[in-house]
Image (cartoon, rainbow, N blue to C red; front, side, top):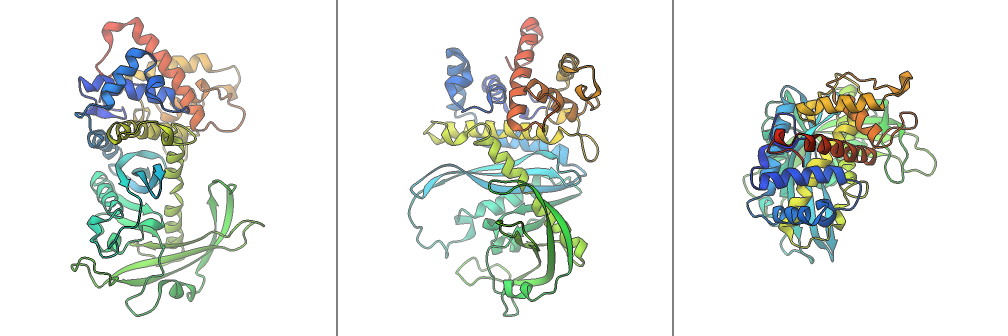
Length: 450
């Protein structure tokens, strides 16, 4: 893959010379080495490569903000005219004694087919141990929870060209300011964490518990640790509510109340031994009928995409929790590059089946000049039977995903290739591309992986 900033590559022009060549080298090595622990020595591949990456990671001219900005610019192009679902969440990089380092990420999904359109934002948080005095009285801008508002603002900005933008987040983002200061052009779906006071004097949870069941439907629940994938039968309730502004010394320019809708969905008959799924969702989308309520539920269900991205960054891929880099700046640069690479891998995983909906173009994750090598690889991997042939059209991301899966060891017969298989396939693809580039050294571009 080419990381030089030409249309279709993931990192964009952030990798400018002289750090640019090292940045391209790092991203190529990250994708090629994914699925195993990140170590600068191993990523470099040699003493010269190790020193090359060390200089890049410790170069103050290279900023995470610039890397993320270029990745977001590529995402903005893909969001144009689409109904976008922006998912945000926080994951632990390192934790000890109540403190630690955290990564807050925002990704964009296509609302029509759940395809990952790209990275929207990333923020690094450093937390010290111990209780923080006066936390409840502090302004939202002074709190860690401000990251949720920043993520929503960035989603509205990056995806400004989209047909619509819905920001989805879990219970930690249940903050009054999230709704009171909602950015223009963005809707919200937030899982409720607090039994909030309502403007009419009532309580949030009691109000929805008293509402009648409005409809029932099946909902596919993704597998996660401790739960198998299943279709759950869900009952839904919904009603409009006005959330009262908390009286805890916050900024005085907030409204006394904010009008939203509350959607409550509960599993009717969970399997033996499993807890029933129960989500209370606050949303700025208007919900006037059961079908609209289940659309809100479906929006929240898509949170699995960022959970899978974090698994690729951690135990199922790059293992960023065990980097062995103590200094925050070089660690964050490496994590940022890994995050960009992990998004590419997740795009391939999603594209592997080729649907539903129109196929994503190969330029979402590949440079145009990669197409010839992909086709050559495909020709060598296809067998005589229909099941051994690539079923996807050339020029589609699904076509490239099939090639990477086969290069990663997938036979085409058993199961579906996951992130690790895709990563291993990238290892083979990068090796092949490097070989081709070495045969024509005078044709290399500034950002080619060599």
